[in-house]
Amino acid sequence: MSKSLKAIYKDLLNNNNLHDNIPKALQTAVDKYYTYAIVRLALFYYTYYEMYCDEKGNWSDNLHEYIGSINRLISEGILQVSGNEDIEKLIRQIDDIRKNVSAEMEILTLYVDLFKIYEYALNRIEYRFKKTDHIEDDEEFARMVLRYIFDSEDNVIVNDRIQDIIGQLPIRITRKKYFDYLRSGFNMLAGASTDVWKTLLYIIRSSADLDIKQDTKDAYPMLWDKKEKLENLDYKEITKDEYEAAALVIQEAAEYLQIETTAFYGLAEIVNEVYTLLLCIPYMKSEEMVNSEQRDAAFHILRSINEAFLEEKQDDLPSEILNKFEVLEGVQEYMEHELIRLEDVLYHIDEQHKSLISSLETEKMLQALLQCKVLHSGSLFADMDDLDSDSSPDSEGLSREVEKLIKELDDKFQRSDRMIIRAIMANTIDKIPVFFDTHTEIMEYVLYALNRCTDIPEKYASIEIIKSFMEQ
Image (cartoon, rainbow, N blue to C red; front, top):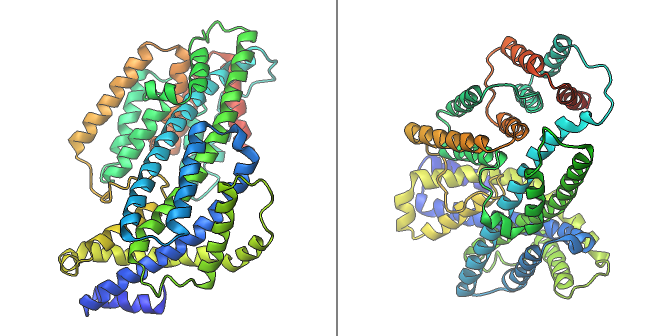
């Protein structure tokens, strides 16, 4: 944290000269968020243009439409100085774009999780049509798994490995036991914020294919057709030809989803930086609008790329742009450290000095900065309308939501192929917090899964998959 900001923060903590120090702190925050966003936008925009030139022919029409909208916003709102009325209009536009891009990513995520379920099922069938080698002894393999899991003193790594393993082991637990694991996983979130358990609930629903609806079909009809082909298979009686055709369907879907999700993710990064700049511009003082060397370099990059986008140029960008990146080297990393401390300042002001903020008539400025904080929270698609995500959930409300989830899962299992049920269990059980208390419980779970699996091709496939990532 810079010396001036440290001094301001110290005075704020001691309630010294608040009428001067709060506006100073907010103005400093505006300046730093603006600089951080303009540098990051230049970096993201350049990378995205290169990807656009290489892959735009494979992108969806919706994606191209959003790219056109964001290019116009950069041209009209960032590269040209607009009045406050224009900025408010542009902020509404970028908010709409961000919501639409987030909605598209949600649909794509649903499809990614959907095809993971069918991929899991097909992987367990693969060795019906392939020669298998000697299969591992259950106890020997279980001990190997345990050594792999605990070959680290980092609890995060250990928990990740446990989740990786249980997500690939043969699923032979009963539905009742599976639902008990879900309840236990959510119960372990007691005391966590509402945002945390809502996120887990969303992940489980997506991973279980519970939210595939009509709008999902309409958004990507090609992917929906592939879904229906896989859904109508009889996995118990599947032939080699059917298996190979289904494997090709999954491969094609995976390749398309990789391209589309990467493009939308990159676009979302750009959107967040444009949003941040538009939020800051109304509060930038005229002397602060004079570009520093870093801002000047960032603007030069933005103008060049924006012109190339708008004029549909396919030529290589001018070599002088590369020189501008040298000016930006290290700026992003330095600003990240500054913003970490700056967010403490904003939190303190918001929590301790709301009444004074009102009397100083800086509510809108603080609100804009808190939105900037959300945009750089580490969650690319964080909800801008939910600035207070630290509240604790109502335990009864959480319990009702979990039971509703379990009821939907049970209904889905009633009409699904057994292999798909197991795939859904596997694709969700590895998302909940680790529910084992001891090494022995893990060993028992691994042995139970292996001992109870009498389908040799499935067992062999599970062991091979687990061995592959243990050897990485």
